[in-house]
Length: 86
Image (cartoon, rainbow, N blue to C red):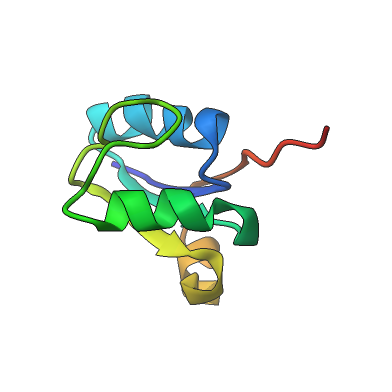
């Protein structure tokens, strides 16, 4: 399977991780500075996403964007930007 990196852990970015993980892809969800509440919720015993109201699959690696490495992005088969721009 492939490797998918999603930048932005809001509703849309997080929701896009679900079908990717369900299909067996390696998935990294990188939070942005405005996603700190989401990062805290998902890091606490894999709690529910505060806006989706459901936990994400354990196979999804949730990281702060600052912890995302160049190799993570370079090795990705797909990079999705799920950052809203109101």
